[in-house]
Length: 95
Image 1: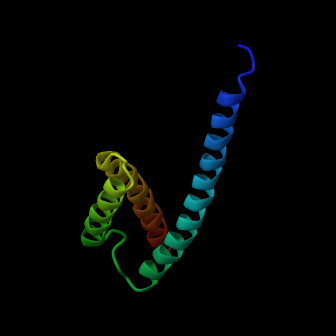
Image 2: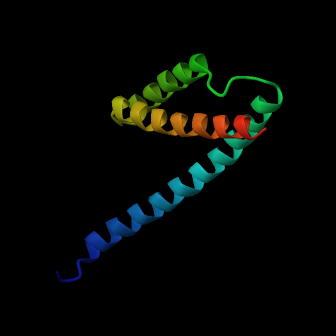
C-alpha cells in the first residue's frame, strides 16, 4: 500500500495515546501495589467490593460525559480491578 500521510498521522496519534495509556497504567499499578502491601500489613482483604462498585459507577458516569460506551468502561475497569486483586492476593500470600 502506498504511503498515506493522513493515515500515518492518525496512526502516530494512536501510537502516542497507546504509550500514554501504558505509562498511566504503570503508575496506577505502582500505587495499587503500595495499597496491596498496606492491606497485607494491616490484615485487610485484597478485595473491597463496595469500593469497586463505586469506582465502576463513577467510571460509567465519566464515560457517558466523554461520549464513550459506559459498558466498555465497566469491562475495562473490571479487568484492571481483577488484576489488582490478583496482585493483592499474591502480596498477602507472600507475607
